[in-house]
Length: 331
Ligand code: UT7
Image 1: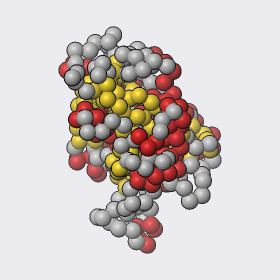
Image 2: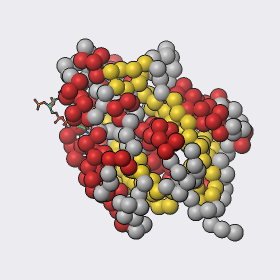
Image 3: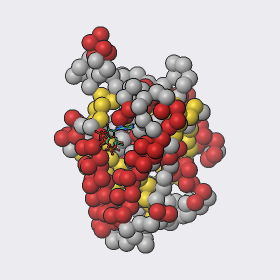
Image 4: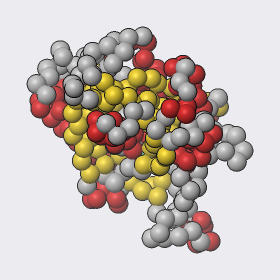
């Protein structure tokens, strides 16, 4: 029997309707469209406004989009993974609720959290299960309601993040397509630079933590930027080198959408022209776990069977890495 590889065989997505533009942000904090555009590449982001709804609201819709497009029977799904930094609830898995709501009644499910690298790491997890032969259909969803942990009076973070969800299906492949190699890293040195202080086991919620605004994301942007630029470029170059890929062999860079300047630096290091770099940061900002599947959704019609894709991400923790994947289907 030929070796099993893990291929992405379908994609789905959902973004909320409400568009938070740079112009609107200008009325909320001291900032301007020119600064945001030139420093980050972001023009607008989506915000989930539905009362009482969390990340699962978007995860369910992204999954249903995939199920509809692929004409998939959800009962065939073995495992539902939800990559997220903003689960609906602190304890009950968002993935369990999502799986039930989409009718994946034969699946087990759990959440996976590694900040902005959650989806990238999730790809590794999903692929490993498939390669082992243990499961045949794994739904990996990347979803985040970042607006639930952002302080909209803090101009250093509120301009960056947005809400959204994307989903992919992993299935076994015997043609050698799908995930080829991965280079995943982490370093706890990063904990101080990008975090949410309160609400976890170290500093549970109290009147004081609320008063001190410790339930919002804090980011030392400059430091994170420096680490992100060098590390994302390093792992992407490394995965190319390890697999004997030249810039001509790489058809697409699929980079985490945190800052256009970080993406440009990664592409430059890989020797890639701009037309090979997937970008949607201008439309959605940084959606944390959703950036990579949202890119696949936006570019799906341009992807061809056999295309070489290099995924790269960097996030809180720090967590980061790169994955080399061969695309498995034509539009
Ligand atoms: O996805 C997870 C990983 N996260 C990242 O990768 C994000 C990495 N960091 C970044 O993308 C960038 O550091 C930011 C976009 C967050 C900030 O850009 P920067 O070029 O590093 O700006 P800065 O923090 O050095 O600030 C430059 C100036 C400061 O003013 P002074 O001190 O020079 O007078 C800031 O106060 O810009 C000011 N500033 C702003 N001005 C207008 C900061 N935020 C804003 C703003 N509008 N929203």
